[in-house]
Image 1: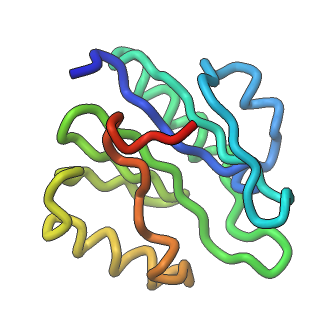
Image 2: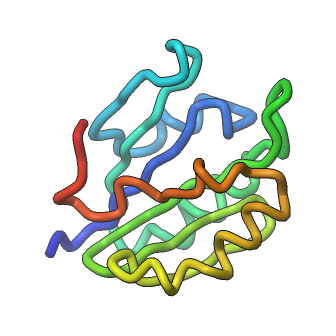
Length: 127
């Protein structure tokens, strides 16, 4: 198991995008017709809470017509899903532990299809 957490963040979820230069970015991928960049970051366990606090404070409620954002972090079987107002912890390998997270995400208008938290294991990473 990797000692550090990996995180997936959307460029459009952050008000001040210079925040990405302060993170340890280990991968980038363009998505949604090149409009969005997905950032894969590496975070030491001792820095996770502070990183989450900074991301939540900088997170947008909406961007154009898109409402609701989240980012997620994973390490082994740990899954941490971060919304602007809430943080959830679940088992990355057991989707039955995701029910409360899915309900909350849908309540803030995130389509269920986008609440997949992928990748959530290092083995699933593609970039």
